[in-house]
Length: 262
Image (cartoon, rainbow, N blue to C red; front, side, top):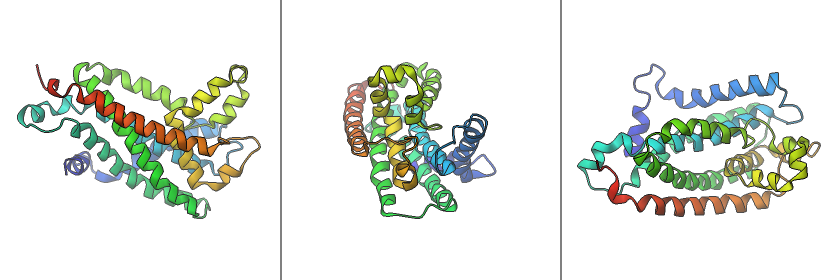
């Protein structure tokens, strides 16, 4: 209920209201398409580039917004924390659920875009359910980590946008990570860099969603733009979700009695 009320109140002061849940990620995707897809030509050799790009922007924005909201979840609710006794972990959890609700709305728009580009539904589309659930668990754990840091170090909210922007550019959201690494001499000389980039959770959940929704993207091999070991991606997705959820909750809970003091 807390998450639902937060979601409803976010856009009450704007004329378009809840439409901004869809317009914000769509406008971001449009900007990335014009700059990277058209001007820099990253859409070359990537089939169905617009659905490919929008999928990446929507999925990564889910994590991006969860982290940003989580970092402020304690500081913006100090009066509530000091007035009531309740598990403090419900705050970053609730803010992540808010972002999940917005993602579900955006996913409806994404399906329309994918269908509009002639991509026919397949059974692989059902995989988007466990992908989003795993990403949700990962986001909850990560939000709890930044929530504890943000509760005692408010400067983290100023640093997070720069960290998230760097993470965005290294996660293959707006360009093919595989094709870029194949053209980079440093990566070719050090294969561990490519392995590290492919294990990046920002890349993992986005790549899995693309492979589930756009079969043509998976089948393209010249140049290779998708990871050739999808089974390993699923292992990464599960490991990241479990480790981050358990580790994040433990890290957050250790400071349970300190939140709201001072």
